[in-house]
Image 1 (cartoon, one colour):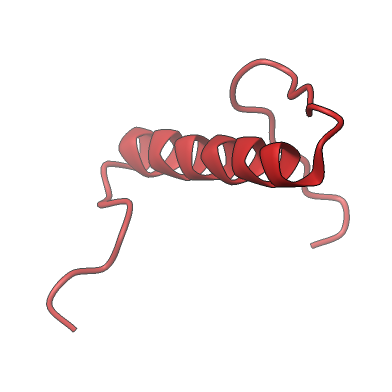
Image 2 (cartoon, one colour):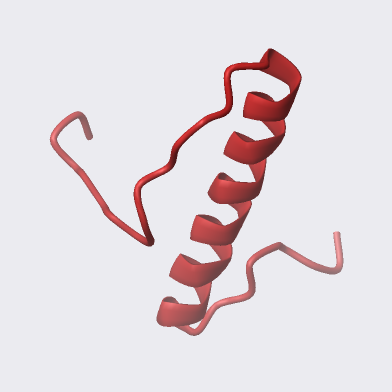
Length: 49
């Protein structure tokens, strides 16, 4: 859905180093995923597979 745009949390500012930026981005995506799942009353990850 190209026009679907969701904001959860503060703007993300990445550090200039690639490794640190990647880690920061991954942490932000994980936090956003968990927040969205919590708001939906769903687990953040599938279990039992």
